[in-house]
Image (cartoon, rainbow, N blue to C red; front, side, top):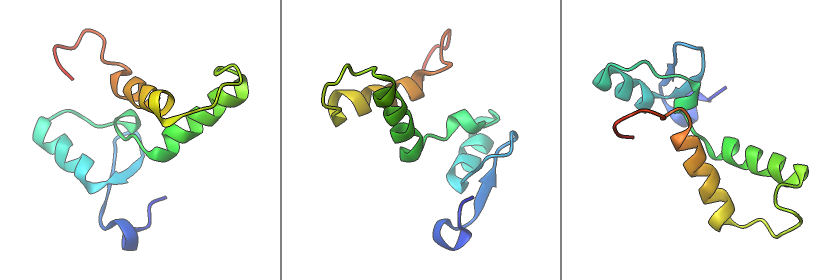
Length: 87
């Protein structure tokens, strides 16, 4: 849950996720309904990074911002964009 005194007014997506109000502005401007997948946070990125590290996906190598974190950010951005003309 986002704290309104820290983040200001909140926007709730159609699937019930509380986000920053900016996402609501983007939804109204584009006419495209926002979902939880449209809101990427550092918490989501680092949670996924830790899951991958604990699973052994990095084969004991040192986890680094470049390339590991940046690759995860790109995968979050491009998730579900197959067949689109632009992102």
